[in-house]
Image 1 (cartoon, rainbow, N blue to C red):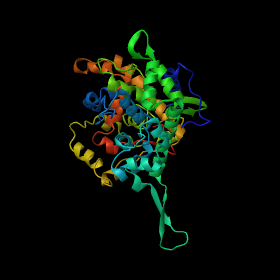
Image 2 (cartoon, rainbow, N blue to C red; image 1 turned 180 degrees about the horizontal axis):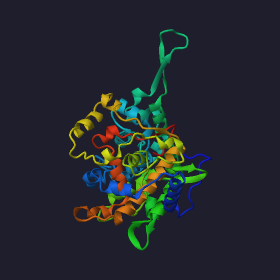
Image 3 (cartoon, one colour; image 1 turned 180 degrees about the vertical axis):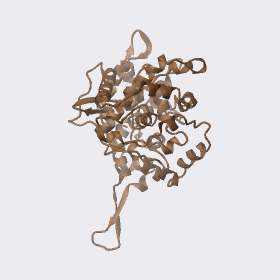
Image 4 (cartoon, rainbow, N blue to C red; image 1 turned 30 degrees about the vertical axis):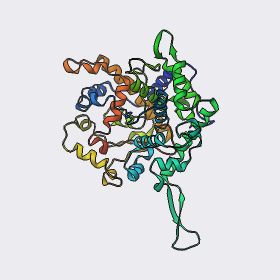
Length: 420
């Protein structure tokens, strides 16, 4: 989360512009190349054409729950967004529970929602007061947050103490929940959903009923909650990413944007920057769009080597034999050998990760611009209508398809991180 040394947030009214400008400047300064021919190759590739249409909206938002009000549902989506991190714990989570980071957070929220706690775990007070023990219980991690060590004075006796990577994750999640709840209580809100709806209504455009100004909503959310303040630095300049806040806005549009009555005002998210995490930049490297070979950040040059760009682009998981078997093996019971077969990605520093995430944001802007003018005919004309959120959804989802889930490594950021 933010600290006294964190870079300043953008001036009011400039969040979206600041994301694009800072990310483009970072990519250029780091000399990460994006070649037009590589973009064209991706857009005309087998992997893109065979999977894009059914994966473009797959952001993992389906909720098998019944909600008593729109505020209740917005609250859950908002909590899912602010807790949308933990990428660095994917491997230990898979080994412990058989779930990845995102699914683990969903399990936590389902448990919180269904809890019969008198206070209501998803209320502002519930968030403020929830304990690490309760979070571990709801994440199904109670048996995985202890380390055993020899007793200091009794030979042959071991004692357990809280610790390890999954305890660290529980500590981070609990910290975000407690901090968010305290902010909400102090501001007089009953839950995060109430705050978000108030922000959407504050951004209501007078000239467009039912439409909210994304800039206003982002400003309200990001300035209020440190867990949304996703800002890094490179060569002394800020890099603005704000992945979780952008994700939240688009998640609300996906859920409520099709409602004829527009029960809450919503922003237009078709032209918002992508929600850059560790998966999307990694996939852009594996698909040959981000060229790291001459970057001024030395540790990134060979971080993903070897990269089989041609084989990746020519892969079609919808027809390839064995794709279902691979997927099943990796999503099976905890401790299965499938997890050990996953490609291990590079561990990056915070600054290296911000540089790569920024490059991905700028590259996706370039991909969408290229798609609009791409010379296509017949059944491929749909490519020209590509939007940034659709591209984001596809890149994130295709990483889980067939052998790509197993073979294509994703980077992870070292240290404690609650931004993605």
